[in-house]
Image 1: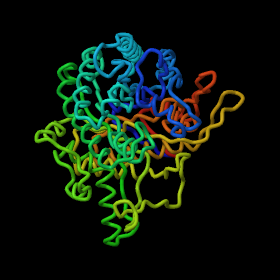
Image 2: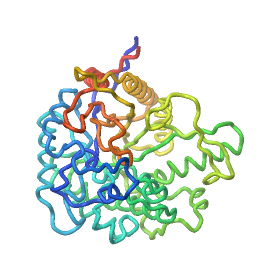
Image 3: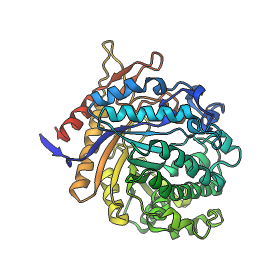
Length: 444
């Protein structure tokens, strides 16, 4: 056995998203995911977020549970339509009060709040006038960010503007399997640009409203490997990496889109105004990285962008995502080498498996525990190589609404009975408790 100890100030936490856990639909405006859930065939069994796991009403007990599990950090997202029911206009004080109480509860429990301002729940009213395809939505986001930071900025000291803008742009507007459900490559790239623009516009506004705070953005990144060392496969890996990673990393850190992917996009490139990229690349205090798996690719002239994504032999989660811990080390070291962020957090990492609740209220999720142990070790390896990794947020605190999969996929380290809403810590939660309390991972 060996013990991998983490830096003394390392933040161990869990992460959630507003639409996936809160419920409380009667207290907020409608969002694009409410609409998407009503679109026949888009969400598993027509599931929706009206109740979710009712964190809106049960947050105090959930914070107590977090504290009992030893977490000293919690990443949550603020629901835009809970603050501004129409996306603009009159502020819903009930919504702001809710997040203020949540933050107070966290701080009283010794848990540092990390607030994400946008985790995919765009107000329906804004979608009706163009959504993220409209440049005006970037300005509306800044107004919303100012309202939230003005209210919470005296107590919240870590802010994330956006969660996974790649998913918002591509999965929601190119593949059509997330809200709003469109399939238009030009639209997707324009949406992505406006998301980045809104990030850059919001950074100084958040800093002004919350002095001394750290501000960043969270990107979902995939280390990309060629199937062989042939020139064709190496080129395929470059293209896939450009589409999945560099298209968002380069504007944020280098002030330009990657030239090779820009050329590949042809007439579909977004409309970019003169000052946009200098706004997008305003310095940030940290980068959040969400990591779940890797891309292994080969050249295929008949595939999208001439690339074929392979499905190698190995272990897979219920999401059909390959378990590949080395990829976390690789993406952390690569991002630090190429972009030099001041600090990095793993803002999401976790897995879905078919959990079974026993008659005595236990969930023996050995695969999830092994998954987390291996990924914690991979993060430690990156720290040993000089990566300024400051914290790790397990996805997710508890089972919840898993987007288009509805309630059919369980990512939580806490099991939720979706009928009674009772919470049951899984074995993986107890493992995370030991890691957080010891600030170390024991390898078998």
